[in-house]
Length: 100
Image (cartoon, rainbow, N blue to C red; front, top):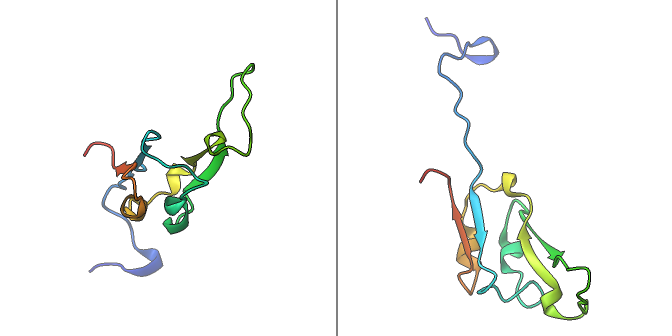
């Protein structure tokens, strides 16, 4: 006799999956001010626009496109749906699961 519902006992071990890895090739990426396709299509809101890390003596004009980068900040939310990969016109994004 098998138990089902809230009183059922789990007999199989839990399987924990690692979040997918997201790589952005910034040499190919046209930048968030020109594109943002990945940010627009991502159902999990993984991507966001961030300022470029600046060396103390370096000056960057905030109005220039080089001052900003698209980043995959919330990687743990990624479900590897590949919508960002398909939407990127420059093929600058790779999504893969570790160990594959």
